[in-house]
Image (cartoon, rainbow, N blue to C red; front, side, top):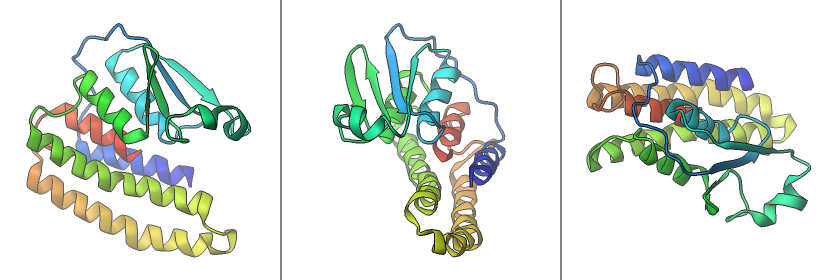
Length: 190
């Protein structure tokens, strides 16, 4: 399944036909990202920090540390969470939006941000579907669930994304605002 995630990530970059870049100078805040010692939803934030040239503490915990040591310390009982100068923000989507805004990766206007958010929600459906199969589907049903996901769910989502990009995109970008949205979208689908 991890190869599927890599394929989806690189497919997204091909859809964007763009290089991820950041023109916003780094902020001087102290950032600490707390997530499992895996890529998952935490990777969105790691890539954003790297693209922005922003230093941060990448604090990774093991599965065995999660329930006893860390779960009670999180804002919502979930990971990832982000500490910014001692303040804590939980949940992946608000963190992605915060970092996108902070480092200039979000589109400029309300409508463009809504469009970007729309496709991000759909892209996260891919991630959530993968997680459901990997961690919440009984072993006896995984082969069938994976087959349905690969032959029905993914092709439908990708067709709809291509339609969306055709309607709202420009010059290979998901929304007509340049590399910023491409970056945001590429991060979100992973």
